[in-house]
Length: 240
Image (tube, rainbow, N blue to C red):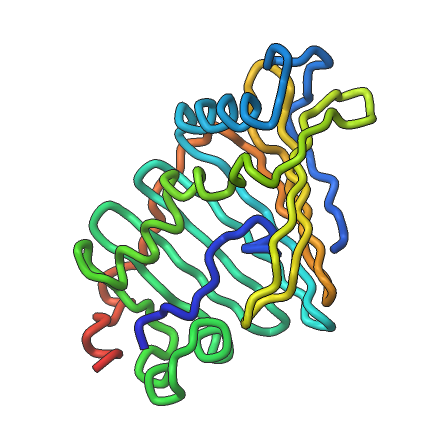
């Protein structure tokens, strides 16, 4: 088991629909992109995100009767994520040198894909993965700012419009075809038209449910909250 079963944050979640209304930076009424189009809004958004040191991401999702909540702090070199799905809990921490995985019994087995024997070895400890290993790289790439470019759609097939409310925010809409493992989805990404062209919210819907991802605290500085060495277990001791 290499933790490859973990879902990437795909806004919604990590697609994760009830739409959340959270406190976000107010959006100025004027447009920050002259003569906005799909391409120009995407270009401005990507450029704005590259200048940010971090962001908080809050995701709610529903698939059938299953509901999940994901809290993520994405930083330039540090990241932290907590996943809650029913009674299952998973926590992931990354730093420039290590990544840590911990969670409840069902969180580690059902969400992360560990076997019962592997979970028993972990218990209440955190699995530690060293920088340079494949396991570390997977977590690090998902929880640091390099992942942000992946939340933006391709210009082709994406439609642009201005929101109908007073915010005049930019809205990008696109569809993703069904695959052998996922249903077809419709995504709507709302982007601030204020001084910083940054994502505010993404809503994804599909035939079984969907989810809402809310972005806040752009520019936050994410710091490490690593567990004590005595509370960790090496990846190699868990995964043979």
